[in-house]
Image 1: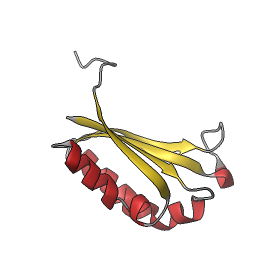
Image 2: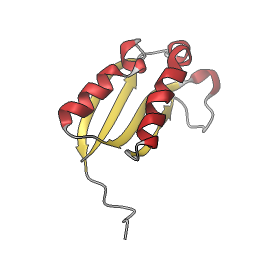
Image 3: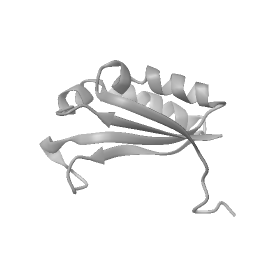
Length: 102
């Protein structure tokens, strides 16, 4: 089943994000290589595709996991969660409707 993982950053998280970004991306790439990743990316803190020093306000990952518990465990072990980039993380079941895969 698919799960949406939404992390909300602490204020002024950019330095912490940059410090663990490569480890975070390794985990995202692993999901992609396993064919489980639907989408992933950050929320820019300002209305710009490149927010520069304004940084990001959080991230969204939609991926396939065996269960809600597995998705939560994956999210809790993410470097952004363990290093204090995220103030909180919400994991929810997700049902993809569009675009259809027909």
